[in-house]
Length: 272
Ligand code: ATR
Image 1 (cartoon, rainbow, N blue to C red):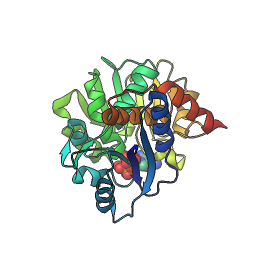
Image 2 (tube, rainbow, N blue to C red; image 1 turned 180 degrees about the vertical axis):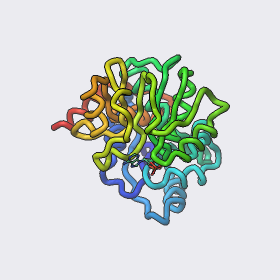
Image 3 (cartoon, helix red, strand yellow; image 1 turned 30 degrees about the vertical axis):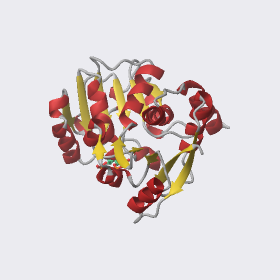
Image 4 (cartoon, rainbow, N blue to C red; image 1 turned 90 degrees about the vertical axis):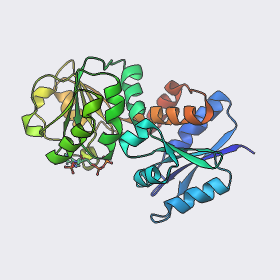
């Protein structure tokens, strides 16, 4: 029987993970099966136990269970501990190893796919929720000249900056105070889901800046449209989605898939 993998979430019907991992498996000749698992809102731990009981080898975890997965794991990677959240479970001898591949997915999409080196650059991270927290350590690992975190609720940005102070040059600022040059501006707020743009000065966006939205969709997000109007290069989060999946696949199977054709197929589908 094929090795079994799932993605836990609620809701889960929209998840593109089964398609991504099935494409990776076919491409690399891995004998595995990957499907969705709708866990009850109050039944995540039971669902994981059932899955392990059935011989499951690994899982992705999405909204709203990433914090619970962090609590449930028997062991945690350094990046999962730093993120305070887990999106990848690897089951080895009945033990649950928790990892978080979201941040490295973002970094690989920016550095490898977009060809935008981060070392020595100034990065502005918008947001201080779960999505932002998950990417701070992997961004700092690239040794940027500075990482500035800004959030609508300023205290959350300050807390995040303080948590990672020992890992690199990281500071908090307020949306209205932001000034100076940033090479990369990452929107990790959920504002795009409501069609909103974080209130930053348009002068931060100009040619030579990459404006990255962790959200993706058929159309460019409101943030990407705002950034493009002011001359910035823009990129959405579809590549991050594919890259975080590739990293999970690598953890489970020891094989790094080629993300380029999978990204292209997903983009074509989105725009069909
Ligand atoms: P996620 O897991 O997607 O990060 P979250 O933890 O609820 O979700 O965090 C949402 C983030 O988006 C927060 O940084 C939030 O700002 P607050 O901390 O002030 O709530 C930010 N956010 C949501 N809507 C926003 C908007 N319209 N403008 C700016 N920031 C917004």
